[in-house]
Image (cartoon, rainbow, N blue to C red; front, side, top):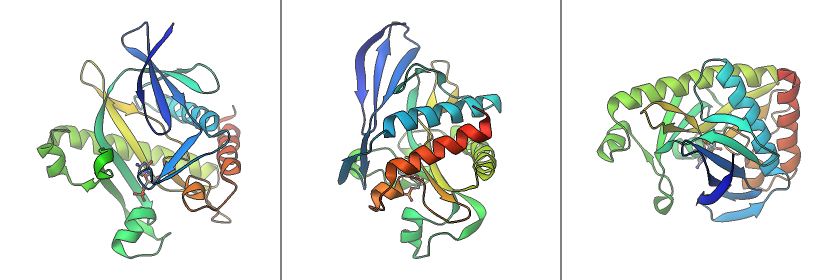
Length: 239
Ligand code: C5P
């Protein structure tokens, strides 16, 4: 397998073509951005940790029957994945109030929700990825109602598996964001990453934040938090 030209560069990752038209290489960077890239920085070891954490989580989800784009980890920063066209919707799941929802609704962070809350955001940097609803998504041509049903179901299944996995790590899965992609034969599968960049993860005993909020809110010990998540994940998965 040969690495070819860069196809795309995002805030935290690069994507490269390979000699196989159905496979691409994802490279995880240490660059960190927040608040629609108004805050920029770099977190030591972040790329390596997010690559390793996403690898362990996607392998685990694959074992549990969730279809993902993940094929294999190539090295400390890169993984080989199936090429998909990313559906331009961020699927956000919230089990507790936090972040933008707590702000928007004027509630404290950390309130356990009696229901699983799903938000969808339109992936559009110029607009700051606005919160939209299903009708907007259909209007925009991002997905059909049938596809949205499938996407919510897949997202909900992933949430159930991850709540349980993080619980074993003594961590509360407060909320997270995933991206879904369509394969060349039209199948909707999990793509992108699942890492402390894309989840809110709180230690159950101390409520310490072990995720990107440490960078967003200048809380310090950012690298340490990512390493902590990786170590706990390895322990519960016996890796
Ligand atoms: O900012 P907000 O509270 O809406 O974020 C909800 C969840 O989605 C958080 O876990 C956050 O890390 C994740 N997220 C993300 N990428 C974005 C926006 C949110 O991974 N562009």
